[in-house]
Length: 250
Image (cartoon, rainbow, N blue to C red; front, side, top):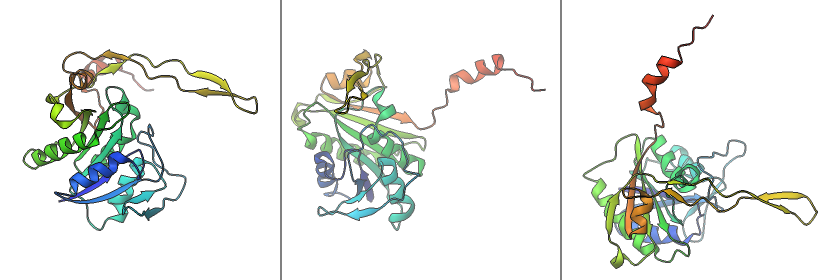
């Protein structure tokens, strides 16, 4: 079994190195990751510049592009054969609730699924992010279960692991996405030349974070495993829309 491993924090990230070390004990793993930190790049593709891939001193391959670029390039051109699984992470920080919309970590997994391969994303839900080995062990456990229970063709897994020692985990919980409040206002500032600039403010606090959500599981020291659908169609709205959107073209 070959795993294509990527991330959004860059090829030099501790989370990536830790996950590679643990996965390599069981599988053939190749790392293709961004040359720079690409957090919050979502599903962006570099369509206006050529991509370059170079092997680094740690043996990992770095691409001058986004997380989605790395996975797309790896599967579509660089690797001689398709890997069995795409894994993205370990992200330095959580990807809970609305975070998945912006997450480069989740996007790398999504790109793998777009390319026809099963894929998972994993994040360490903490601020200082010390216990990457905890998340790595959880990923190995989950992958072993995927052998007998493969993912549906339209889904990926989004895994968030509390930043605590493995022995302190309270378990693993299948969850749904929670939701945050509206993000804080942008911060207006001035650059050294006197020009106005703007910074993003703090992310919104949890709004929908009750039992059953990814927020709740992590807050109670449980690993959150959320199946995400790549097909974003709101099927429950189709019949209603057909009734009110009855436009006759002339």
